Length: 187
Image 1 (tube, rainbow, N blue to C red):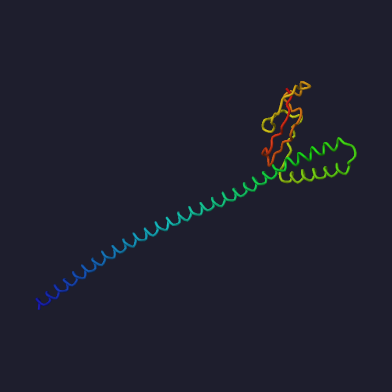
Image 2 (image 1 turned 135 degrees about the vertical axis):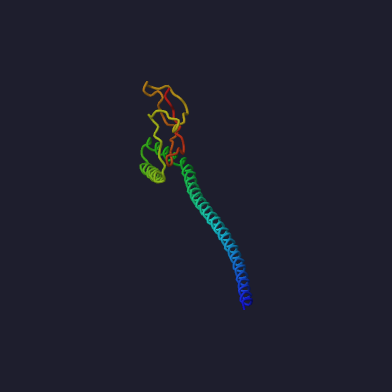
């Protein structure tokens, strides 16, 4: 009996060893599977981080594109406006000359009033668009706003270096010089 019990115990030990080996094998396989899953999760997280980074860069690029496009449109409108107003300056000059010539003549009150009305309406409209006249007569000569056509001997000492007369009126548009005032400077 003892032999039989020993054999049973030995068989049980062998069975337990086999079960332990199987359990160790399954544990190793589970550990490998866990490592693979952790590696796949890390790869997926890295891919997700890359996608998020790509998305953020794309959004930043789009925002920059949108802002740049809006600025370009605004600049284009300003440029077109400046070109249009610059084209109207000779007409404004002609109205001013016509008005000064009509003031020298007698009669023609209707013509004077008509030219004055047109001139005033045009200057009022252009002022709403940002056009400002450069006041030059009697001012100190400034190359930022004036262009010297000629120098003339100053009638008095206090007029030296100052604008004696204006040959052509200058204008600014939105703070930028659209046309320099052509002036005669006292020497």
